[in-house]
Image 1 (cartoon, helix red, strand yellow):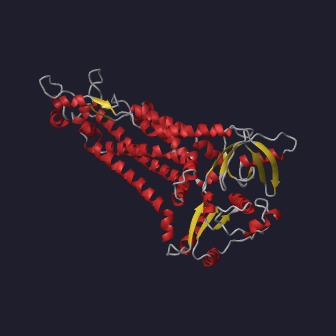
Image 2 (image 1 turned 60 degrees about the horizontal axis):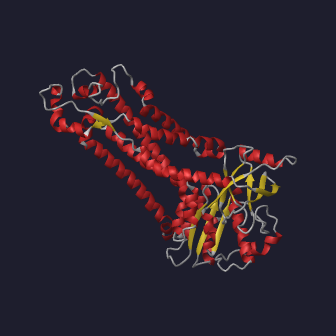
Image 3 (image 1 turned 90 degrees about the vertical axis):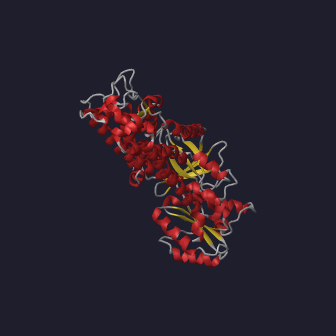
Length: 512
């Protein structure tokens, strides 16, 4: 339990704060529009659907402000790697950026559904009140003359105008349809199956976010919800004049016809700062990717694994970091993440396995012996949880399939540190890496230690480690599937001592 608290207390606190802010913003906006005198006449037509629409819009703005921040990888790398005042426990939370990005996306979907349903009710009530001939307050408000001296409240200007027509001809309606379609495409293409099997579909579709945010900025400019002007309330205060609506046209009446104004656009204010930050991030990444990369060695390994050894002026990395790779001859837009398999002490390298169209085309291009070596663009490196591996005296590295690549970098770096007697190295359990590196034949690490096939008995492994190191912190690092992550996380919790002075297992998982 103590280990779980240490590993997750900040994440839980952050999620509770985020959920609490969503609830607070929703309730605050809902009550404001339910009680505000400015919208008294608007509520006579729309009822409580007005408050539902505006409250969900407020939460949408809040979450749209957050959605881009977890994707600012340079910012996260800066916070993780260069800010020494961050404790390891706090830095680790930055590795949950993709999980938080998804949670914010789900929250946007929820409030989008509420917003759309509420506005469908609003449009239906606008249409019904415009067609009404019963002389009710809603009917009178909907039929206020559309003249220069009077501002209208109901966007449906004719009894013959349909809801569908307003939806596709008004700024708010048309942009609403566009950004909703864009959101649906982004969310559906980000499903695990599509992202794993058809990465190109996910990559291209997810970049519709540009259209989404442009449409969002325009959406609020043509709002369909209006409120009474401050000047008008001096001549027609709803609490005094609403019951005398049948006398508004009487020149002798002290209650004049009310005037209305549209709500000021707010969406752009929420997304301006994170939008600028993200644009700066993309400019920086583009500039860095344009710097020349020299491919020093190309190695084709069995099982369609391509090794690229490269050199780039000014390139600096830490163990376990990853880069984005682009090959313009295959696709000028697609950039795929690959973990660095080299140590910081040598030129950087990556290993690429054929798992999709892009990787297969890349391997096929490098297999052509008589063609010129294709140009490669590199963006990065970016930090991961594996950077903390040297903070532990005992480290357990678990890689599944091509997931062993980040640990190749770690094992090589350990060997270099032992060779140069690095006194800052805490990690002590690295005998095989130190003794057998120069005699290795492993395609990734070069270690002489043989690979053992089959699923490890994790209970036995953790029990042995806990017994051998009863008073140490043990870092468990995984690059592999979620099912394996659940098993290892459970073991870390199970075999950590309740006494914080005794053995503690800290689980860390790679996320891209």
